[in-house]
Amino acid sequence: MIFYFSGTGNSLYAAKTIALHTGEELISIAEAENRAEESHEYCLRDDEIAGFVYPVYAWGPPTIVLEFIEKLQLNNYRGNYVFSIVTCGGSIGNTMKVMQNRLRKKDILLNSGFSIPMPNNYIMMGDVDSKEVEHKKLTASDETLKYINHAIDQRVNGEFKVQKGPLPWLLTGIINPLFNKNAIDTTKFQADHRCTGCGTCEKVCNLNNIKVDEKPQWGQRCSQCLACVHYCPMKAIQYGKETEKKGRYTNPKIAISEMFRG
Image (cartoon, rainbow, N blue to C red; front, side, top):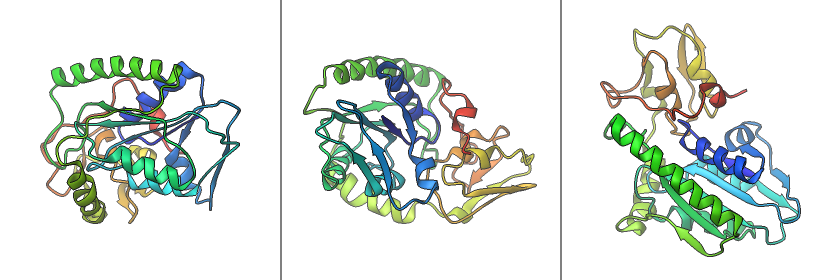
């Protein structure tokens, strides 16, 4: 089974590609977390693989992914092959080490890990990539996914093919906690005059945190995925002044309906 979390489709695309190759079931971490269950129980078949696919947020796993693992119970786990895939704009710091440690606390061994550079979607800082760069990254990501599928087929153990970047201990150990504490203030989300009240933002919100009554209103929960910003068909949703005059990006190989939350 492949557990995934995705904001603008990059991680969902990676997870779908792996799932199609391996024949494994796709399981949405966001949908599981929204059920507010005390535990997330899944039963592994003998020799079934388990994968975790998610984006990196400020050199660490998204909080929602770590919260999911805290509640995770893999029944019939008997040394099954477990891997982790991180989609990213560049370096990932010690993200994979954090994942290893969290899974170890659940008595689950992470056998391998990979990072896949994808088009940039974090427009709080910087902007989206040019179409030329976007195309190059997506093409390269397909080659990386072929390599990962081969590694999974071979049950490669102990391989962590990731780009940590410089000073990973600083990026993940200090900057990431500050990001998680201070990065998102939901009161800064707003819909400008272009908003038509179509409800797309409500449908793609990973935490069911947006309600549209003529215009969207945000609650206090936020996964920091920016799906509402990027999927708005009118580009009407802003986060303060940080996203004004910035581009928007969603993975072109993922249909918007695949991002809708029930």
